[in-house]
Image (cartoon, rainbow, N blue to C red; front, side, top):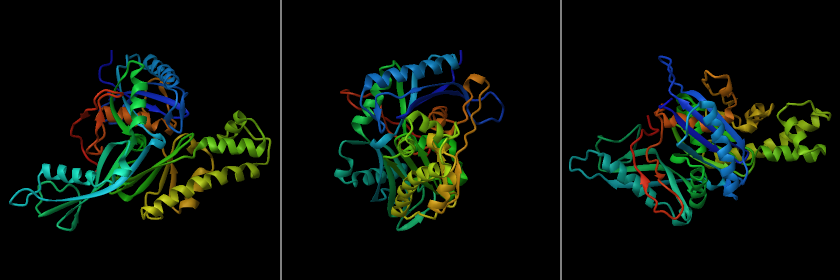
Length: 396
């Protein structure tokens, strides 16, 4: 019986994916070994929102059962991703005067300045939402930007610029309830784009500056990194399903045929030029949204590590070149090193990166996790208590 294992659950609009992982037995191997996986078609979701909890619970049970069977373990608790259109981010700033007479900045000062930044968020931006990540982006001491953490440094005034990742409260509660209906406890949650980044990006990419784009069936999620810290997160209501629908309409074929043609599993009996034009038009829409967001935060054309593409939609043949041309950035498809000793658990598709990232996080195998992650211990009408613990922050 394997005792030291971790489970990640990614509830997507197209598929629910479950990954069971354990620390590898190989000496010097830091990448967790995949013990088992499970997946099922998502039912009862739209743009990441749960519209029928019973259907979602049935799909979850199927995926969890598969993962238990292939890993030969009983799943009692899991780490859950939060995505969809209910997810967004807010930048806020805060400042305090340091508390000690000798001006040494304490852990309490760092905590207090982050709380001030949170309190500065406009009420209209946070209504009906919960903060799930509080991530310090940068600090200033007496007006001077510093690298790293300010703890034990000296100064009169401490300032912080922080990224707050928020989720619609009802959406979060519905997700947790759906998982708990299967008899599995939710031990922790993480925003999907950040969970995926744990296993698709390396420190050099995150330090130089990059954008990770996850192209799902109905949404595209992006997270922008700089100085090894996420500085922005955004979700767009567009995805691979829109490309499938465009192909079906443009070529007057069924949705199943359009999907197969999209992922190049069959040769089209139509003009390849027309097919490329249809796909390029929709990809152009996606990259225009990403470019507009990068302009908004002042990072368009300024991310040396470029754009890294993941998710089910990243399998479209021309997408890498299209991203490079549209964003004027280096572009590549994400690759994830999944280690497994079983033929039944071989997964190579980067669309598994969110579930695998969550399982990896659960094993405490990765250090660059944001400080201030706060997790609701239960959902529904119960009193929400925040599980507090200290984990390493993104700042180096």
